[in-house]
Length: 116
Image (cartoon, rainbow, N blue to C red; front, side, top):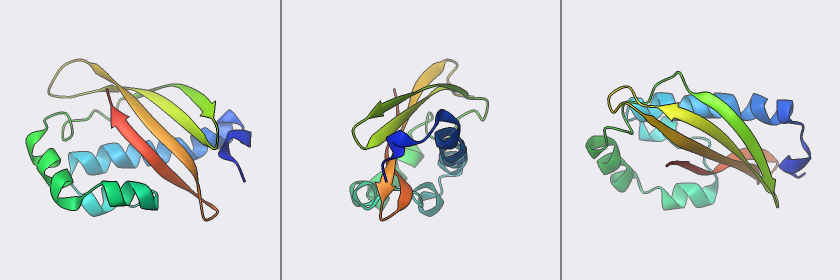
């Protein structure tokens, strides 16, 4: 199955709860819960020690607002990118949130998650 064949509504029904979890668990500095929907490749690249350092050092990573806004979906290859306007509660301003979803073993997983 290719996630790009899903409707926007079907994609958003998957993406919004995953983004909400990333925001919540980033703020809580909870590595295990933060990475639970990651693809195998993402988990291998998301070293627990390095992520722990990022959670400890980054005000951005631990002060994400739950008042984010959905911006749009980009379909490419076997993946979709869902974009969010992501405010921060400490550093006033907005960041671009990027969530890349695709299938791994018949389950939708996170293949990328970043803030710009």
